[in-house]
Amino acid sequence: MNKVLEFILNNSNYLITILLVVLMLFLAILEKKRKLPLISLIMTGLAILGYVLAAFILKDLEIFGLKIMMFAVGLAVLALFVNITLYLITTYIFYFRLNLVKFTANSTVNKVYAYLDRRSRLINFTEEFANLIGIEKNIKKKYEEIILTFLVDSQEMNYDVFLHYIRTLEERDYRISITLNDGKNLLLDLMKRKVIYNGKLLGFVLMSYGTTALDGASFDSRTFYNYLNFLGEPICYFDFRTRRYILTGEMMNLLGVSDNQLGENNFLSAVVKEDLNLISSRNLTDKLHKIYYRLNTNRGRIWFEESNINYEGHYYAIIHKTDFSHSKMNFRNLPELLETTKLIYERNNWIALLLVKFSNLPKFIPDIGKDVGEVILAKYFSQVASELGLKAPKVYRLEDFVYVLIIDKKEIYNRFLESLNTGKTSFVKTGIIFNEIKYEIENALGIISSENAENPHPETILKAGQEALSLAADDKYPESYCIYIPKPTPTVDFKDMGIDLSDNFLDDILKE
Image 1: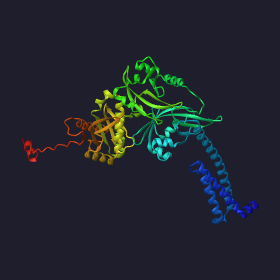
Image 2: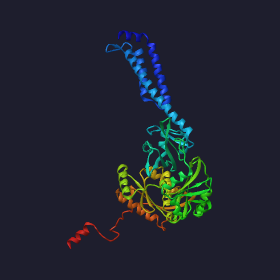
Image 3: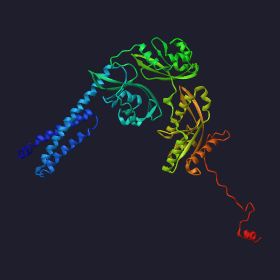
Image 4: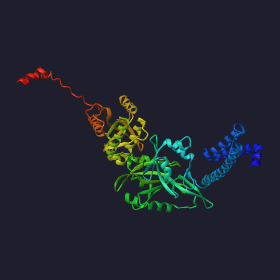
């Protein structure tokens, strides 16, 4: 042991060389991992710190009869071993993922939006997906800031829950609606596919809906039609090469036709006249497009959604019935309103309710339908919430066309009152655009803050708000909004009424 210690002390330059190798390995791991390797950082830092202490500060210190330099050497060798191991693992993962990206790029014409590892965990989104969302830097923090929710399989979830949701080892297709913090909605049809090379699973990719050469399979148009027909839904697609609409059995029954192929004019004759211009102005490109139009069917006017896909290198317009579920808002009910009002008041000792009654929206419903009415409601509340600075507003439905919005901060409430006073608000009157048509929405607004209520009970606050809304909705009321103010308690002057309540007056009555 003494000879080993003597050799180390006489050849401290070797220790410096080891430390340099440790540092270089750390930098190499950092370059390939693209994020800070914490274990490597700690071990490298301890090794360098140990050498500095042993060589310059505590060089005469002995622990258990051994010079401290011996411990510094042991720490450096341990750091070297750890960094070599991490470097080998990181390099293997790096080139494995590099092969995933390289093979995918050579094997598909579709746009790839995300790469997943062999356990279906997200490696990274691509620049194409970042551009689609409108993110300048393709990093996780940016996605968490700009994306409010994902809607997948009728389930609403945040960013982290979505990543967990797609962590399955199966291939499948997703129809995803993404709600951004500016109120915009993006609808994506994505495929999750395995990437296999030389019999090894490299990982998974999320890419735009269409064909892929990753599995080497090939399909013909008949397979495509059979797949759509198997879904058992009223669907058709427009083939831009043959200029014909191909209908599934359900679509044939709905339109009352006996042929599953219709020419353009025959199909367009079923389109509601007011919506024809939407079809004539569409522009088919490699970017996702969505338009909505109504068809006259055996069951009356029904809304359909049209979007384009890439299949076998050819573009098709897929038309399917829609209820706009991805564009609607999840309105909460009266018990939830009362419970939330109670909790917020207990927390803040203050709350305000904005009650909105849509005055003229019912007039549009016979023409546009209830589903589109729900879409207009969602757009309206997204617009006014953005105006107030509310990122994820909760809206409560009291009855048809009467809704409640909660404000839990006085500064937001005061800013709202100021906008009402100046007329710079969308609450009472605004234009909502749907399907390139602008609907002028007019509302009555009842406003109540808790300090003006008789007591802080949720039922009392809500009742006061309903009184204010009732006034605002009255045609004789001068404004479209009403702020609830408590009625003053009347004071009675008994002297003016000729009543004497003095002691002398009472004594005289008692004597009698």
